[in-house]
Image (tube, rainbow, N blue to C red; front, side, top):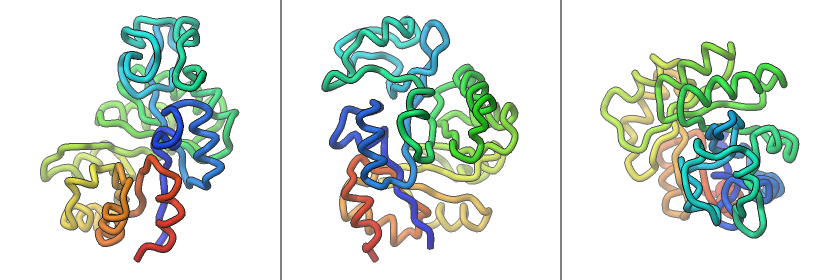
Length: 227
């Protein structure tokens, strides 16, 4: 069985999350896919950050949507790193990417880059929002999409199918074998997040997941040998 290991915001357990430093470290560690998050800046740049505001991960304050790219660039994102834009990540690493979009507006901006650079094979797009998954698929024919959920009801596989998502990325702490089996029966892959311990890695294997998202490079190495 093919088992993928996705680097969560690079390898945020050992490097500042969603920075070029973190992404390069993830690639050096051999992560199969690098996961990142996208928000639109005030002037429409695809800023690579997880939260809607800059407070937690930089030395600044306030919402990303209220700042221009130049203002975001002036912030320290950890260990002297700057907030990157999506295009910089594409150039900094060669790995496959999973880009999480926060809304439909970000989907449209991302679609422009995917089409301009012919990235359908390299970049898959994820979102917690069904409508964003639908929109990116409409704008970029053939793009692989992932529906993400932390809490969900019994219709989660139906939602993925309705949105055209090829995969589900689900909270490992709430995943059940029933959900995984139902997804696989419908041809939908399942990724568990966030898997940072050997116990959770063993659980992922027991559930026969298609892969895991992790903060730590070590999970990728040990995952190859965990029964």
